[in-house]
Structure formats: C-alpha cells, structure tokens
Image (cartoon, rainbow, N blue to C red; front, side, top):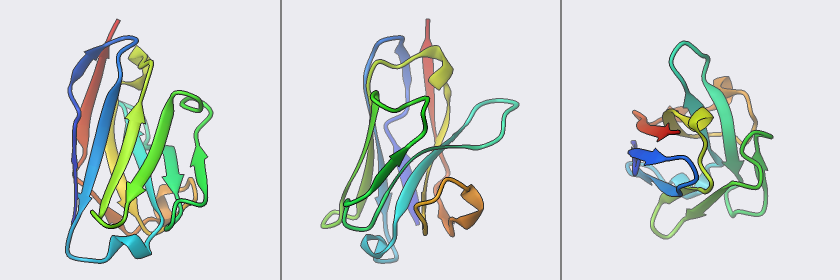
Length: 119
C-alpha cells in the first residue's frame, strides 16, 4: 500500500514536500516514481529513483526545481518541489515497480494527493 501526503494549496514560487509512505511490502526493493495528472490531461511522469538512490530521472518541466528522494529505512518516498508554478497544479501519485517514464510499467499506485498552485 502506498499513501501520499503533503499536497495543499500554495502560491506560485512556494515550496512543498510530498511524502509517500509504503506498507505491506518491502518497497525498498522497488524503484519508485512520482506522476501527476491535471484535469483533462493524461497522467504524466514527474520523477523516478532507483532502489538505492543511485539513479534519478526527471521530466524536463520539473528538472532543477523538484528533487526525488527516498528513505528505505522508513519505507518513504519524497518529492521536494521548489519554485512551484501554476502549471504544476495536479493530483500527484507515487508508484512503485520501475524507473521508466511510462506509467504502464508500474505495479503499485497510491491514491494521490492534490497540489494546487495559485498565481
């Protein structure tokens, strides 16, 4: 089970950190990722991280502003989001199972947390 938290309404330029708590499985064995879905749009890749954090990948739209990290001892995945823009408004999902950008390769998904950025 994956449970996201930390989403809320913020202003443009603000920072926010999302968390994804994993339980029921040893998610430290899985690469993990963050995706987001805005109203009327398809779910899109945000960032991913390998099992021991050696490899990370970011969508061009968030590179330099977002940082993905994980604490395997705590079975928790994070997404630090800085300099938020209204275009970042979406429901953010964490997922486990792969490191690629295609969401179809991920086996486990959280329920999502809403991030709203006002201009």
